Amino acid sequence: MTGEWAARDLRMRVMPPVLAYNEDIFRDVLKAFDNLEERANEQAHEFYNNYPGNEYTDPGDVADWAQDHSYAWWETMVSLRQSMLNLLATGLYHLMEQQLAALSDDYAYQRVRNTDLRTVKQWYTENLGVDLGGLAAWVKIDELRLVANSVKHADGGSARQLREIRPDLFENPAFAHIRAEMGRLGDRRDERQNPLSRPLAGEDLFVTEDDMRAYTTAARSLFEGIVEFCEARKEDLFPIGR
Image (tube, rainbow, N blue to C red):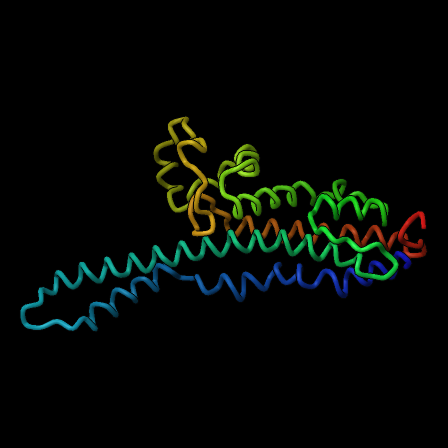
C-alpha cells in the first residue's frame, strides 16, 4: 500500500462518518431543541386554552397550572438537550477510535482488534510512522477522551483529570448569570460538593454546543493531519519496515 492509496482510503472510506459530525448534528439533531422558551410559552397557551374547566374553575388557577406545565416541559427538554450533547461527545470519541482503526482492515496490515485510542495510536506509529500525539489536534482529542469516560463512568479518574483542565464543564451554563452576579465569591465547588453522578441524564456535566464544535473540528483536523502525512509520502510503501 502506498501513501497515496492510504490517503485516498482515509478520505473516501474512513473519514466520512466523522465528518458528518461537523455540520449534520447541528443541522439535523440539535435543531430539534431550538427555541425552547418560545415553545414552552406555546405549551402554556395550549394548556390554558384546552383546560376542561367549568363554571367553578378559577381562570387564575388554570393560568398557574399552565405555567407549571410549561416550565416542567421546558426543564425536561433542556435536560434532554444536555443529555444529547453529552452523548454526542461520547459517540464522537468512540467513532474516532473505530474509524482510525478501520484503516487496518486492509489486508496489508495486521488488523487492530482493540480500538482503544492508545492501542490505535501505537498502530499508526508502527505501521505508518506517524505520531498522532504530535498532531496539533491531539490535546483537544485527549480532552474529549476524558469527557467520554466521564459521561460513561461518572465520578472517577477521568472526571478528576477533566476538572483540572475544564472546571467549567461541571458548572451548569443556565446559572452563569447568577455566578457572574455573585462574582463566584472566589469559591469553586469541588467534586465532593458537586459530585458527577448523572451525566447521561443531562446533569452534573455540561458539554456545550461550542464544545461540540471544538471537538468536531479537532476530530476533522486529526484525520486531515494523517492524510497530509500520507500524501507527503505518496510513493512510500506501508506498512513501514515490511
